[in-house]
Image (tube, rainbow, N blue to C red; front, side):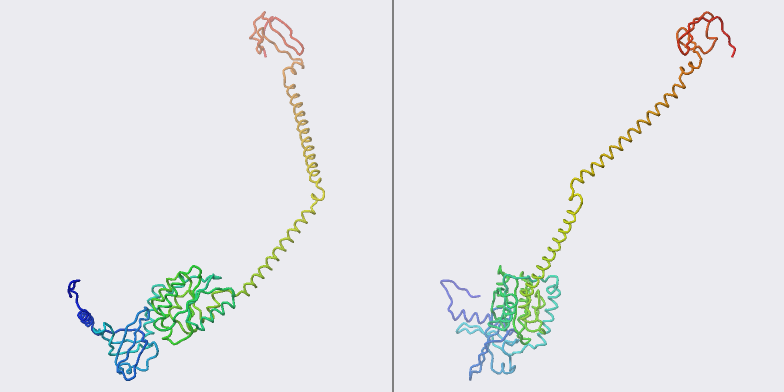
Length: 405
């Protein structure tokens, strides 16, 4: 470890050599990235390139002998490669570079295998589940559009959307949709539009291309960012047969940019037709309702009670008079019946009364104290008694009594 202080600083040469010693300990490594900026100078034995990270805005300076690059020629533009290299530190100018000994192009088969593995892993996490997909708005305030710079896909989306709804507004972000910078720029645009308060739906689109051209839209970081987005996302990448992972995580997968433009806004002519049909239905319903109510009102007006309102009173008067007459007849009948019953009862009572017995010639013998004599033996000779007849009382004195029946 170097010991330095303000009083004992080390020269640049020593520090640079120390950095070189430290870097050399890393040894040879295998690295993967996207090849770009290949510089071949005529007559120079060395080739200088840059190797970019496909999911981050960073790159490394690479150099190799011409023979190393020629061994894998021809390489397509922005080819994905794996390099066996060693870090080199140039102490003289303080620069770091990677010295490449071997270059291998990553084949389509290997990339497909990686995508399938990533697809399976994301599916297990539930990022492709239908239940987590958000519904697209019926009529967005603004449509966010992420597309290539001056691309046909942009024109297709905008023209088809405006053809359906002329007043639709777009918030457009033109970014790289191919190459090493695509993932970084698309991700940055997606974050910006997702945070925009007026953007209700985001379209991510680009035209068709080769399998390698569409690889940025299967990048894990971009797919996860789309899954976490709060704004509904429409994916319109390539053509019908193309299926990057972004299509699976998006809330709606459009087959083409044209389809995306038609999907995010309604058709104004169709909506006007629907409104017209609804107006006609409402008018017919209202007219039928008014006709029904007028017919009902006419039926009410034609009732006898409305022709002659006095009928209501006269009918009630007749009903009251009938009830009154019925009540009087019932009362008179009950009184007559009661009088008859009373007369019969009086006659019956009089028939059974002692007076009726006396009227037939019988008499009642009473003692001096008013008691009724029932046995002759209860009287003494010479006892004063009273004999009650039908009309009056006879005073008498007993001369004798007999027990004979």
